[in-house]
Image (cartoon, rainbow, N blue to C red; front, side, top):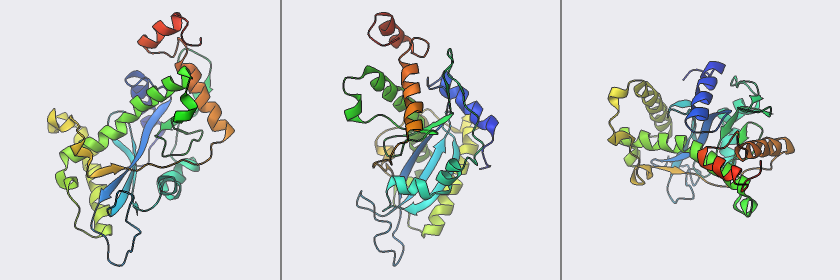
Length: 265
C-alpha cells in the first residue's frame, strides 16, 4: 500500500460526503483481533479480553471499502488506545506525515474544520479523529444524538470492510496455526489482495458483500476508553454537531424537523 497522497484523501472525502453524509471525513478507523496460535514463551501478551490469543489488525478504510493504511501485529492484550498511539499509523497521523488535506469549509456554510478520520468510542478524540459523544453526554441533547447517528452510519464502512474480508478470505473463519511473523505477512498480503480485487467488481458476488454476525466472529472489535480530549478537538466535534443540526447540513428527514422547530437552526 503506497503512502496516501492528498488526491486519495479527497477522493474518499467526496464519497463520504455524498454517500454517507459526513463531509470532511476521509477515512474510518477500527481495529480487529485476529485469532492465531499463541507464540511459544509469549506468556499472556497475546491473550485478549475475549479469552483467546490474538494479534491486532488496525486499519484506515475509505468510503468504498478499501484499505488506505494498515498496521498489523500488536499484542492482543494491549488496550485500543495504546495500540493506536504506539502504532506506525498513529504516529504518522500525529506528526502529520500522511499528507492529509488542509481544513476547508463545510458545505453550504462558512465553518472551516479539519479533514477528519471517524472512529468509535475506543479511540481518543483529537482534531483529526472524531469519536461519538458518550451516552451520558447525549441525554436530552438532540444535536449530539444526530452527530452520533451520522458518525456511526459513516463508520460502518470499516466494519463492513472487515466483514467483506472474512466473507472472501475464509482463512479468517478459524484460528491461524502459524507464527506471529507469518500471521503478520499473511494478513498484510490479504489486505492488499482485497484492495486489488475491489478494483474489479467481477470478483465480488452479492453474497460476498452480505455481512452477517457469523462472518465477524474471526475478526473481533476491540473496545475501551479513549484518552483525554483537548479543547480544540472538542471545538471541532461541536462544529460538526452544529452543522448536522442545521438545515444546510441536515439530511432530508432532519430538515423537516428543523423547519418544524424541533432542532436548533
